[in-house]
Length: 182
Length: 280
Image 1 (tube, each protein chain N blue to C red):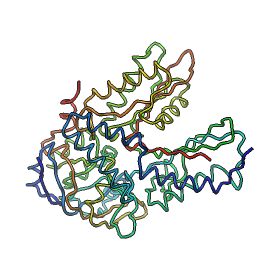
Image 2: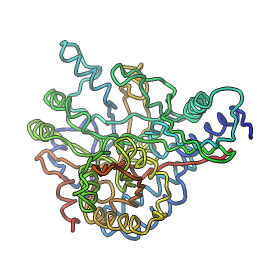
Image 3: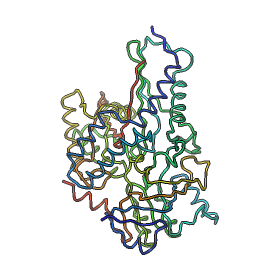
Image 4: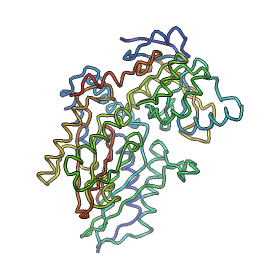
């Protein structure tokens, strides 16, 4: 089923999403991947503020290629989400509502998704040239020294994703693969 | 004796970095076109269609096919009658990478040290494998390698008693564990034999063989086909969202090994299996 939602995502919207839904996200999302997660995790351990309030927000696990002149961003597809699993439950407990990436998540992340009524989306891995078209603005808001791994605030229009783990804990990877296994 | 100036190497490498990250070789494009017809899952078909469209946008708008433009891996075949002039071969390749990734708007994904992890900001150093060969030609192949799939690669030190069944199990296990993480449809490079490091290197080099070309050894060709069939029965499918096309090809390279061993390496590449070659 095709759905259109806005980010930050409301609790009502997140509860309406089911594993397997095609979703077009518009609004504001934040990029963060390995090194930015490590820094945020360290900031929390030292009781410091995060570079953005995660409450209700969506993190896109993505490190873009550089933008050419006159364009907001370069190639911009998802990276493997499981590398962020160590840091994710804490962010979900702080109110993070959605994540966009690709690939499997840990049991701990799934439990934290259910506990906090959140959602994990996948974007098509390796389709960075198409996905760039949905990103209208991009601004580095923290950790500039990390280069591609800096935290960016993105304005997106109809970013195409699919719900992999919904707020009830249903997992599309598990059900879809069983359907075609011989 | 033939003399090659490092300037030609630098210029050649710079162009290869750019080309490999923007345009896939014909073998990969053809495999994708064929997969769209073969795929039974509607979702799988849709994803494959997006990947086709992605290739068109990448080429026309000069946006890298994938944002992970990889660590630059090179296979260099240096004819022993070649003399390199004007500098060191290794420096020339790294300078080509520096220029290619900087001038070509490619992502800089390399950190200086696995512990300190400070981005080198120009994607150097490259990983370079040299081979001395007969003749007076210098052949350089680049295979920029993304780490979504690299991280899912494995080495299995099997026993001779594990035999062909053991090899099949090892490869299929690696692919199933990789699942959606490795951006399927994948290309599966396999190295069998040699030693611990030799099989890994063979698996990597196997990825540079076109996906429409089988091993020249008849029983290895059969094994490639059998393993591919088993992988495509896994149900993983495009994007890991279920379907028939999980891999485009299984490319196997082999080498003599020790009486006590059966090393098997599985180097997985995503559907963006980039490779380009120049000959000087």
